[in-house]
Image (tube, rainbow, N blue to C red; front, side, top):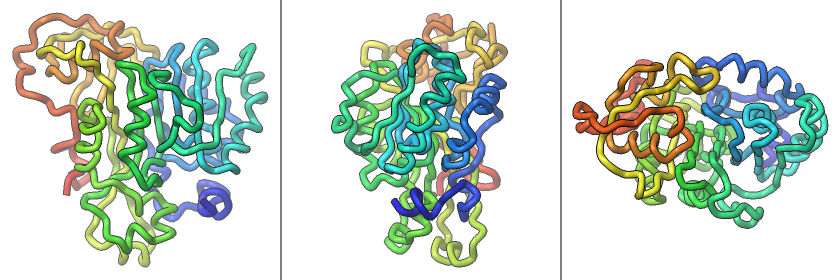
Length: 335
């Protein structure tokens, strides 16, 4: 981990935009919360924009690969004093930076006691760090699963620690094909988040095997590489930075398609909730959803934000809740 602990001293040292790709526009509450995070924590953070889902009050959140703690301290404000955020990272130097600033942030947020903790450990082995089954509402990660050799183990562990109805909301780098050994063993490409990129179709199969709902694509952006040597090694492989959401849907929540009406109750998303690339819910508007989305809304923290009623004849054809056919710039995510 010398690349992250020593060679990269700040985010400006990165050689591609893979780890700094911005996501969709941020709500004001998120922008304001980011401004209250210590400047050293922000400078030492390497991730794909911001990975901040909606509807977070009082939630328990786990951040996989939390680095210097930027997202944890941001989320600390959004979950409130009754919520809790755990960050886990394998890099000792990054965990030290994060821990060093706990008192600063709790004082700044005017919290009586800390609602964040930072652990050194591996996201493939959350049990070794003492994280129990069904103990979190949300698991997030920001451009780090590509660094894990065993991605199935990461998703399996995330599924294990999530409560029923819980969500894994994460940004990462995906490839248009399975990567050659030359790419996978290239030190700089590894550090830049490309060498470990998952072929996007494999995400779907792994998620299904682990037990998650089909991945819902939220955003996707093409990755640009401004280095001739790296371009020659990569060849015709294309990379995107994408944010997906996966849900741990209990079998008891599964039924047919329905109609839903969003009540506008999520702070920062009162007029509309852009759930993913397929579904945008406007306040008060009746929307037909397929059985998969119906189960997600019924079982998750979003249940109180929707009126769910029988119907949905137009939703019988599955929306597929995914990235097939979603344009990424001039290219599609699938190769």
